[in-house]
Image 1 (cartoon, one colour):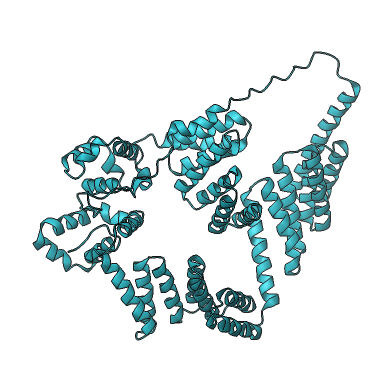
Image 2: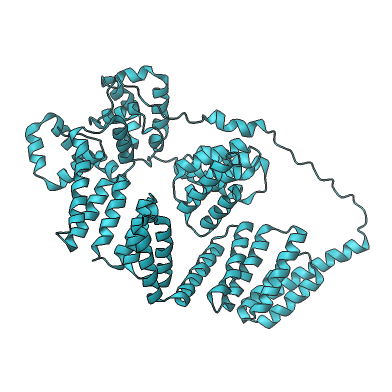
Length: 579
């Protein structure tokens, strides 16, 4: 089961569907929690979505489980680089190179990390909008002066967290759920952030592994020093060896001549030179891949495929560079795409590209794979398109929905979309099924597709708003319902949705949220870039102070729609409370 989930994750990753890949890798990890490769793969997927905090956690788990695996340190370095922790990234890449000094990925990562580190040594600029607030001794002075935060300075773990944030403001998100950090942030911003009462127990963030802990697995494994190869003795070279070297040298000259002819578009001459090189030296598969490239340019796709197959077979026998094998598989896939006439003809091409990516992940190969899959899907839809059968499947889906058999309904709606992918009603119906099955990401995707196909179809707005409401994105749900009302102002379902959203938004301002709900909403809100911009806006900070200390000025601000809109966002996020 774990291998099956891993295979699905790899396929989704190769197709660029990183959210699906994360979901499949998570399933695999639950089934096989000690498999270091699964954490490594999920770390790569998180990094592809720029979720570097999660990528770092998985990378650390990878090296913990397999401290002698170079790729784990490559993942660790990439995650640190994404978080702008360049010194940690350099350290991770160096550890990986101790295990595999010739690893090109680690060498490239180390070079990039050093370059980024050198560029960041100028005037420090925080990647976080709160960076300046944590710099210098002024931070400690403000925390000491504020009575609500002064006691925390006697707590070592709080001081450690603030030092870490001061060192790298990007780490603020790691401690956002700790109410003491929220209180400190409010003191530094001169804003009263609502938190749980001092008498209640505070939830502390999960302890992050220290730098020394992260280093321990790699340090525990001694670096294996490469044994020096014996130097050849100054003795006469055997005749057979001399001839072999001469043949290799001649083969290289033929290859260079073939390259020159290829650049001049003299393909027949290039073929002759590459063929001679192959006859002289059958231990270099680049001669085969180069000749395959010429056949591809000439439109001789069958000959190209034959040379690619030979290169792959011979390359694996010789244990050639995996990049060369990947190149041969990519060229084979390209030739197969050229020969494809129906959707099934793309299957061997897609398989070739996927195999190439397992050998070496190359952006060009990935693009070719995505293009081939897209072309195959389009042809399948053209071959399968039948609006009449689509309507029949939709009706079957409706019957199953009425019987509350939602998985069966989804199956028929999906078949209807394969027969007619332009019907917004089917997307709306399937979104309703997914909502019943609590598959919210899929439901949201279908609702958005429904609106895209027909922006006047108000049912699509109702579906989307319901999904956002269940996901506790009340502001977004409210906007969706209001957008639908522009097309049908008296739609009762949309009006009811607006009412429910307003009730949830107002719960924060009335103080009706439970401590857990408040903490969850605050943490989510503080990660929202729009909320961060509001809190760091000097004008809005003055407005917030006026609301607390200057009622007359607060009345003036209340007449400004733009200001009140921003205040309402802070209220909805649980950051401030209006009484």
